[in-house]
Image (cartoon, rainbow, N blue to C red):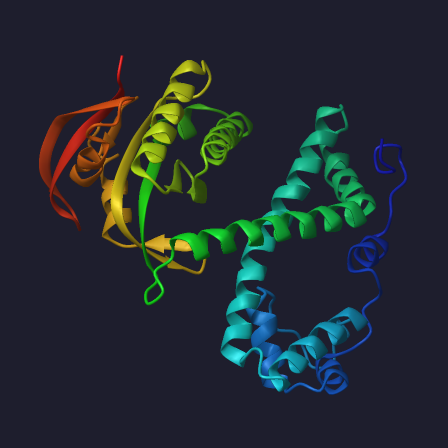
Length: 328
């Protein structure tokens, strides 16, 4: 049990020092002078990480900030990165790690609360536990980052066209049925548990089959798969898993194959829009594919498709949807 749960607790200042690894010492101009970087550039990087502007005389920076800015300055002097590229990379780190730390802290707080700690103490106890685990979490972060970087590099070298950001891929959307009604009917904690379980189940299925979850937005999960057969298997697995779970509602799954534009970890294009729209008019518990994917699955021994409906869809045009099922 953490010190909060036992009646004693660390101060906010001590917790902050545990997370940062050192005390705040420098104001904005001083940290820029020590790092040898222009104030305007440092301000852009600070904002790209997702932090609010601070006063010129407020000591919010540490020696680690000086080291990081010196590293950026060194990369620029050697011509390895320009300012715009650095800002883009920094913004990616800020967005992804921002969600990561919120997720991790919430998970630890919920774990403490599940042990019977009073709600008013669980928040501090969870934060204190995060401070204790910071070295291990940092080590795991670097490990997973390297693994993810290696996997992304392999995909880029294997699939990407040399002259364009467009890539042939199968795009899938899994959409929870009755999301709004569910949010109104269930207590907030139960509703959050349903959404979290939905995300976890779909993410595990996608990863195990060799696909990649691009993002989750409330009641939807967007994923990518290479060959159409892999996408078909993922879509049918997700549908079956939700149908078999007595707690989770059914899903509608839409799949489309075609060109996809990759940009800053996200995907765009007509194929993405089409996969999303296929979930709009489908029946619950069903998997629908577009004509291109239906043609690609023709002759695949494990699947069968039949024409389901044709209608104009906003932003896409006239679309023919096909119902996907496993053969036999």
